[in-house]
Image (cartoon, rainbow, N blue to C red; front, top):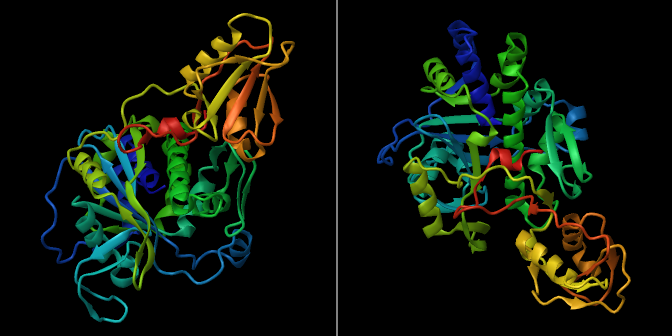
Length: 453
């Protein structure tokens, strides 16, 4: 959302709406100085690096909205979301790297912004840096961990998030399985949904829809950001002066930015990014080496994989793409990647070679077949059957998606090995891919690969 916010202003400026309009918007931004008195900073690389921070501020949300979207309780005054957005030197690519808020971090020596107490360098969770030392300590800690020089800082809260989505007319999200989180109130059936601001906030905040916790939440945030960019750049809303004023009015009232991110930067950025689209963006999360890394006095943290994270941030500093160039796949989205599904194929007909043909087609799509098809006991099967142990129902549904017209049939005791009994109705194996495919060394995906087809 923070990228889209900046791009909204930039695209409008590029379209010739006017320097005066952008100047007026610039004056509405609450300015801070997160770089004050900072020394020994990393060397500047090519491109621009923006630290995007989302806080849990909810002061201006109505009581009704707090109740409806489960936003009660006192905010922790810490960072709910932390991302580095790298804009390439040619302004043709945006690389977004999510930094888990529970990351194990080591903060430099600083003064506590609340108590005034002097702190020596010490370990903490990354999101706690904001509570101790505000934006300045957050920037210093991120630079200390990544060795990436931060050029600009942007910060938004819950209020601006919800209003921006509503003014844009909502954002379309797709999910291949139901998403339910009793903490945030999120309750989405499988399928395509147009989310309003409150629902979108539930979607990006949810941490209890599965066992992936914060990592799963970051993947949803990345998919949402790609969808928001798609909405903002394809709907024409950014080129409509009245609509644009509505969008910026909803956002800028609660945005905080560094003093150097001003009118000239917005206009220059807009001129360079007139052709920006979801395919121009790429998303990934910093590689994690140890889950549940226990630290005395802090609790369970996520410790980065130092070697992989080092290569990731070096790639960012060198202004190189994180995701390999790929043509958008026409494969159907499934919940479980075919590479994780084991399959035994049986020929349920008297047609010679049908079992081998089905086995080869499934293997070519990525399924882990035994490569040793056999004949079924019943050789008069008309409709292709997918047999599965009830504990592997998600895998079975993913496999059935690749076999159009097939019947799902539970069979206790099969374990992780699924069985396909090919019937006389078999025609083809459709290509499928996981909702969160891993691509390249850093698991990065481009925005057009994660938005709704």
